[in-house]
Amino acid sequence: MLHSPVLVGTNLTPGAEGALRQAAGLARDLGGRLIVCHVMPELLRIGMLFPQWRGVDPRLVEAMTTKARDAVSRELESILGDQPLSTEIVLDSGTPHVGVLAQAADLGAGVIVIGPGHVAAQIARHASVPVLVARPSPDGCVVGATDFSDPSLQTLIVAAAEARRRRVPLHLVYVLDLGLHSFQGGPVAQPYLEGLAGVALDGVDELQAAAEQRLKDLLREFDVEGQTAVLSGRAESAIVGYAERVDAGLVVVGRHGGSGFAQLTLGSTATSVIDSAPCSVLVNRVGAPPSLRVELDTGLASTP
Image (cartoon, rainbow, N blue to C red; front, side, top):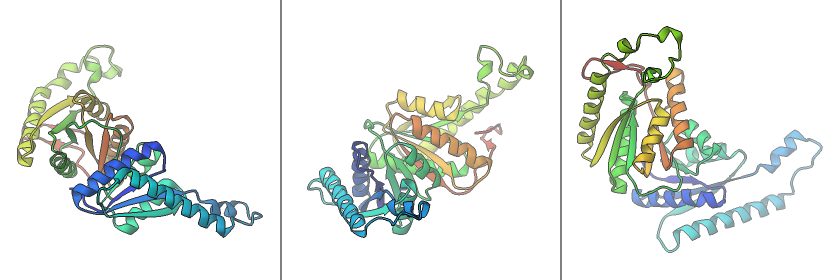
């Protein structure tokens, strides 16, 4: 589940207002503090590149800092109005994603909220806590994606908690990607696959049925109203397409915190979903490496 305090990064553009609004709602529901972080340009660093430059007048730095804090305060007041909420404004300087991550670590943030864009992708890739990439979204269901590995089940717990908090249904999805798209009509991608369609597809129906039953069991365990779906195709496009069809308000995906092949595949899926989803995306960092083979109740295995 998500924990406070909630740290939201703002670049003081109109697009950042949505992230601040969602962060405020999250902090209020969690009963915690809202930290608003703005990262200013690092003018002083120019002096390291050009030693002949005497640097910036300290009075200019002080004036810039004061104006930045005032701008963040006005943005915060425009969002909160008279609503009571414990807030704090922090300023940093330098590279935006580095500044946000540094402040989140120093202040013990439980979740980071950021608007979509390349900064969001960097933060989601490196953060040690969940990251909510906030974009305008309908008040729709929460979609939780899983590959049935133990770490991804942690992500579904977060998705279920978000569905309860938002008071919306929970949709649990599993993407069955066996690399068999070329068998579904059209030319075969690789010559050595000719004539193997029947063999490759043998048992897929049983595997899909097992996955559907596993999702239903999880939904019943979470005791949340919702639906389940087993999708086919590439994970990122299948998840995004499903979110579009059901008019989702949030997609929850996992990102492994380790290294190697598992990190590469999960990181790629999460990044693609962040870039393409029609709604906000919550990226949950999970712990232990997921298994590359997922054993279902039938004894069949699939690679996520």
